[in-house]
Length: 239
Figure 1 (cartoon, rainbow, N blue to C red):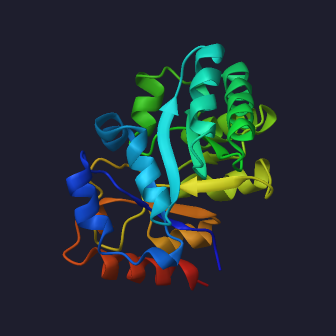
Figure 2: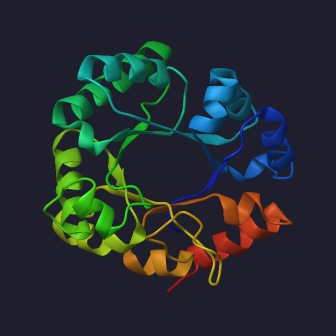
């Protein structure tokens, strides 16, 4: 079995959240992602509610600030009992190290496991053109992602968020002892929406992804549970 297929709960309030989440059995040990939209609307209490229901939480707030501010923020997140959380790798080595320190301090104080720290490399919405002409980056996408992943690993992160298209290069150049968590996952023939670098669950497995993040193809489906299980089966049993 591969790592989790994480369901991204991209809704803005608890009513919309529980309209989706109440359809899922809580005994599956499912991992769900709470992002900015929901967290900023409902706050830490929504995390506690989902934890109490038996879900594992990926709290995806993508912190990026000066190191001390990120450390203090991560101390708060470390206390919550979530499984994964994120920073932007572009925040630099000191910030990533400070984030890890904050998580360890907060989780130790609360007596809960330390969340896995994942560094966002380049968002899956970023194109080669945007990388070159808006970020003024001299590297192509693959080499930029590899460079940021190496930085994240040296700085104490447990893994990276990256598109599935870069994973094979990452495993070769950064190593197998690192988490490669990939959003931008779509069933075959599903619209890309605002994602530029996408793959199916089967393709992501072939590239070497270790966990997937899937939002709209599941939560906007007529039957979210059936959509989840169909993608989960493709992910777990891909050759």
